[in-house]
Length: 136
Image (cartoon, rainbow, N blue to C red; front, side):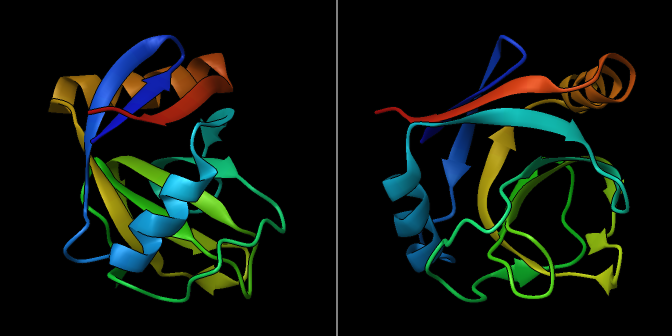
């Protein structure tokens, strides 16, 4: 289980260990992870955490281009930079060169209203603190 803090508000997220064991193991090595969550540029109703040239160390696993709201992806980088994507509404994962697929490694336990609030916050108030930690 993860605890994800977005702009001071805490959420739980279920790790997708059965479907993405290598990705989950790589995420655990990154924890605790602290960065900023910002509005996505090409993916629609989603926010993202840019990670530049960070090496995750895994390839595609449990990948999707069309995550449901709350399904958290990590793009491990090849044609675009490494990033975490958090969809809060309708989304097609993309970058400036076109559609991408990311590894679905966790699912946020949040209501539609809470997801909408995340989206409105990053869209209208800008970058939010993003902290990801493992909890028992």
